[in-house]
Image 1: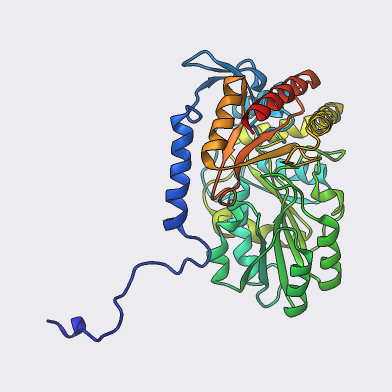
Image 2 (image 1 turned 30 degrees about the vertical axis):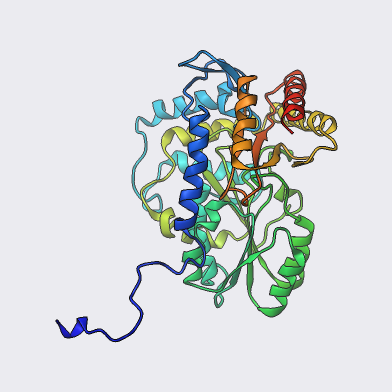
Length: 418
């Protein structure tokens, strides 16, 4: 026996991690079991012909037609002719799919023009990327270490319901600073943290992906009182409101300062692909371009630059307001007719119907699909255990009649189900 193998009486070493911020041993089996239920009911891997639009997708294997209520394209701009043609034209003009290199070294002039047009559209400096997840992975660790604030590290507080794309970075952030989790929208908890620590950053969403909104006034008040940094993902609200589609967060944060960054997806209501960071401080723009995955070789491809420019054109036209108003009308119809039922998301285009067990959520989604409407069954770890349900999203390219018809079916199914 080698000396290094000598039995010392100490407990055996383990390869198990500390599981401070994630636990795959617990989450993966639970999630896979739930996904297996969905697959058994034929609710996954549905292959469609989308030529008639999201209001009439067709399963190419069965011929079943249905309205898609799981799309995050809340205004339907992902099929707008101006957006689609702009992507095609960009490829024709540039004759290259992309430079496939770090964009802080060399980038297409079209990419630079995109930055300028996005900044003009939203009234602040805007940094584009291939996704919000990439932006969060790049920004949150250097925010935590104090490199965006020229300070010592900041205590980083994540809202309990903050999206997985932000929570995913928690272990990395925790290597730089203290990480805390705040009960959802709990301003008292957050105020206590701000009183205890001199430098705090709060990570949250504007409109949450499973329904509900941030307490913008409360967050802003704490920021003004304590100097708290706010990192807010407003992906589910960008384009859905505001004269230029600024989103929910900008309804209070009209002017951004050096203590605020708003991140948003351009792959949802905006109708293109990728993500953006709206910066209150233009002094960090070049630094962020070089940070973490932002500095890798996966910048926006040429077609994505084109479709984003095309969507900017739509955002500058009266049509944006037309679709926003139709979305608001659909929300009004739904909320008025479903009043009194236990459905989260009043006033929002994202609704969540809680039914409890995974099997019930999948059964409810399956019955709605058979009646012509696809909704998403959601379960742990997306939502807490025992709170499974269906998520549905209203869109501005749905007519009022479509919304009325869907609510009639939903009422009928829920009455029979519950």
